[in-house]
Length: 301
Picture 1: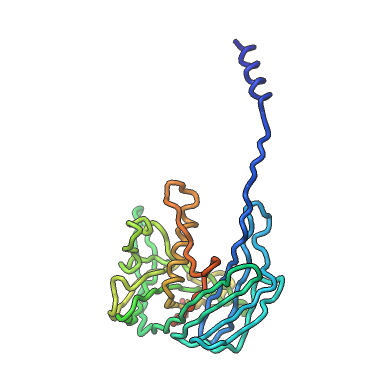
Picture 2: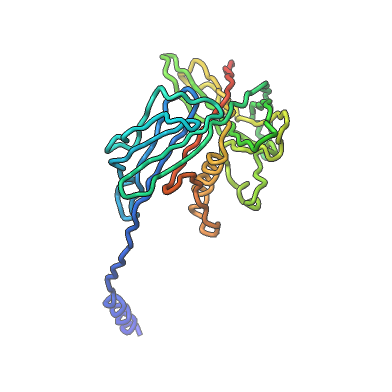
């Protein structure tokens, strides 16, 4: 029997056959990104997607022409820089509530188009903080800083927001070190009650929320930061926390949410595939305006 087993193994090994698979190569799609703020430069990312067999992350788009309209008026027409993926232009006035349109013409392709608005700035009308002590299941006490910020939602439209807290540590030699804090988000506005059937609530959406529960209200939203994440580190003379309230477009809200879901489900094949949101016609990517208001807290110990 042992000899027979060895013979079968050798037979199977001898049947090894090299199989060649012809992967059809599809034409690359033009990728366009631009995130627009009032009183800032206009920067555009333009590239072309590549085959999955390529070792390059992208391809340049050469011989392209970019035009930009603000509220229907031509603000920019420019040959896009060859062999470059990013182009920036200054002195293009952009204001809140402006409508921005991009068009990119490339030889042999349909015109790539995108349109967005620059949302109005939603003001942080008040902000309070208080220290909160919580005891874990094993009896360990943890200190948190609870933030409460007040703002007014516009009831005439659907609005999309994001709360972000940036920690800035200043060393004794003046060096700045910044990082985004992980927040504990327990307020009901952070629970996504949409068509996802509850699955989306498994993810950390980086402080995204909509006005679904608060449309038209004066609202005070609350969240927490762990003290261990923002206290002064060795070599730092002071720590400042910048609290941002972003006002996003629907497109950016859906883009960031879908991107987080794609990254979070890559290792779980039982989840339904998620498509990353795009607002580019005849291409992929995202063009979106955004605005923000911010408050500063200096941590004193």
